[in-house]
Length: 246
Image 1 (tube, rainbow, N blue to C red):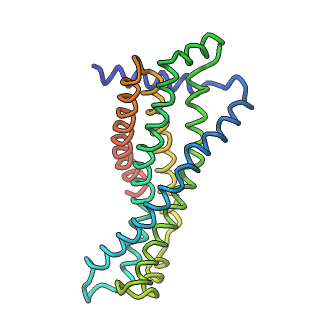
Image 2: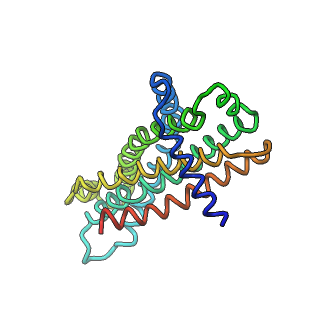
Image 3: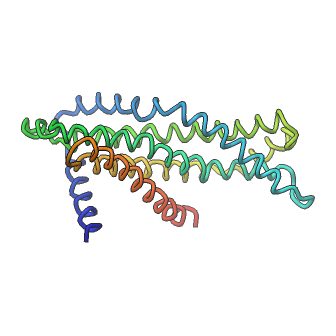
């Protein structure tokens, strides 16, 4: 019964979040600020993980497909497909769920326990919309940019490995990267990214918004937000893959 209680309260919160903003100019400023907090401040970790992820995928693929019947460019092809279809949109989103989700939950949770949200409601402000909607919109705009960057850096990491080691010839790797490229794969990855961004921000906002207690409960809400967001990212990854690729 507790699960149904949370599901119902979550969708009731979504209705409040998606109401028409009282003053659009304030929301625009908040969205720009959140794009910096959510996206630009995550560039470093996304870049580092993507480069090394691409390098590792290239090395593992090369050593596990060392068969005379397989063309050498298959390594580049497999690396590209792995990064674009799964590693960049899903793994990076899971990392952002930990970094961004915990930040959102703890920020809003702290505002709840210090009664700042109550003050907003007394002033007649739609507190849930004011606090959560800019984060949702900002993440749905900036996360696809991060994922495209992650794709590029992941493939770049694979190219660096092939260039500085004897894993495989660079020319074969580049040929595999270009071999039968389908733009729909990018579309599929970005659709997943937008859905994951919505999941991360709304679930984290939910746990933060309904925090009760003090500092200990804020920490627990942050943990619950990360765990729940990660679970739903994995679930929707399966659903979207079935819908878009099957």
